Image 1 (cartoon, rainbow, N blue to C red):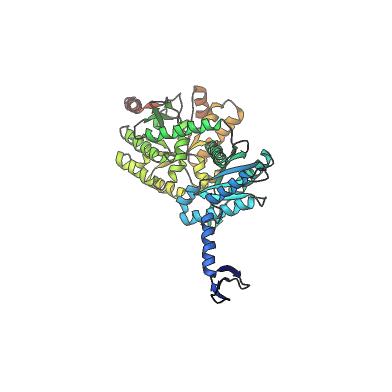
Image 2: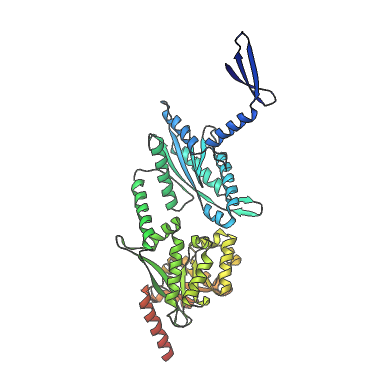
Length: 473
């Protein structure tokens, strides 16, 4: 018996089977197998391609990479490990259909970035993509592609009436310098990606041998951080805030402290970014809100408590509920709570975030813009979302003797007065600084001159004695 496929000009496929007869001769049967062949081809395609974007999937990518590395004349190549920045925020804000549309759009843009027809871009799942750059001609060659990708993905994605902003981080490993097999190359590209994300995102990093130790240390920190909250290793200190004109303490800012049994006291600068990357900042932020409000419930009436809020918390979808819950649990009136956000929150200009902030403000919660002047400081933010307070970053106060810094501080104070916004100077350490601020009409000050960060019990004693002094004075 002999079988063969015949492809007809109209696109159909026929299976021709010839069977010899006993008395000689042949019987030929013709089967129209068009649909069966299409199904087989479709199944083969699905096994090797990502259903959403149509890009090669992990298994096809590995086949392609393994083949390239098995070639005895294998030329140098670069592996790019890519991960989208702020993709989760898009999914949370706009929903999964918008997230799927965005992933397809990213896939199209990535393919357009590849100028060599042999280069491969694959989707490994979620918002992870990987690229093989063939005909690799050195570091500058890979850098050119990395910069092109960052610039291309950084441009807004417009879908109907929506405009989505994301970024992309890249880790790059080079064959043969960074590994002779697929597993090592992919692992090292991932390590470099991890480094890029931990250093601020929307950038690329090449693999370096010392990175492994850095990644191990970072992962160990993440593991310790995960167990720290259930083990009650966190605490809050409070730093007093003073009204400059009256000299009265008007409230205090809650500052998170991590007392690790193995690491000692860990600075917020070291653990907050990690908590944001892992999403742990959401439960940690809820704990801080409740703890701060509970402490403020024992303070003299009218004194405000300020709590720092991360952009990740605001985008979590449960933030407004956690604020209302903390107020209800503690019995503190909404107008005694001040939420400190940074400019990056308003920069994102997500409608969901602005809606959440407006909702809380309508309840009476005050919104303060922290570290003012260190970011982009677009006055458009203040028009789009009017805040209650601007906090001048400590770096400007430290350099008040410098003419430029003094001019910026005067301008911000003047801006606050024009807009009816409270202006608080952070990091006030000397009487000379306080005199300049007073002379320029700054509303509030905080810093070591006013009071050092203290425990909840110490701050309560300080506030009650001040309140008692003002009543008897």
